[in-house]
Length: 291
Image (tube, rainbow, N blue to C red; front, side):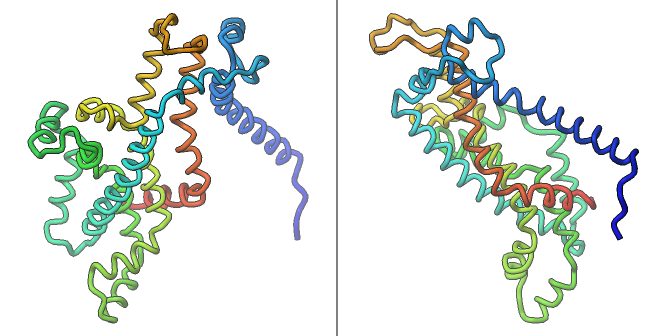
């Protein structure tokens, strides 16, 4: 039997929904402002400090960003690094997390201590650069993937998720003649898709936003990912000579270019979230139950 809500419960729901709606509105307004500002003109940006819906629409900022084929090459580089890096990182992270999740692994505590130690201390920028140089990865796209292939925090989350899986499944598989790799790929991975999808998203966002490593390790501008190229576009738009004969139109406003750059850099990642949303909360929470 369903009971009607009391007056206090209704008031609580109204206050709760209103507060959550206000928080959601405060969160989404900056995004709307950035998108709206990227489609407006310099005159409107100068007259209005906060633009949500432009009154004078303009595509000048986007025409400026996509005025050269270089940006499509940079997008291709970023997509390649993101897909390849995510797959490589997930393979190494999952294998390492699964091994450390086995309580019968010899020296497991010492290995775990060594792994966690790297979260607190690392060699620093110059030693890392020297390692990349001596291993022949300098000026290679692999330099954007290999040095950051395993994130310890992500590995610990995945390890905790693996530890929560029933031991009986593995024992049954071993009785049926399945080896450790068979158990990992045929049983553990399919049952861990929420955690796998969540950690994959973490890695994908990290690789997509690669900037510092590209600046440090890549000398060839043809290998720049999208983030580095967008930074160059912002610099050129801010300090460019408006009398330059290469530009047939009036240069777009600085602020509009900056906002358009944010949109171009953010939208591809936002398009991935709806497909992984059902896994995100479950994977992150279940993996954090036990240490």
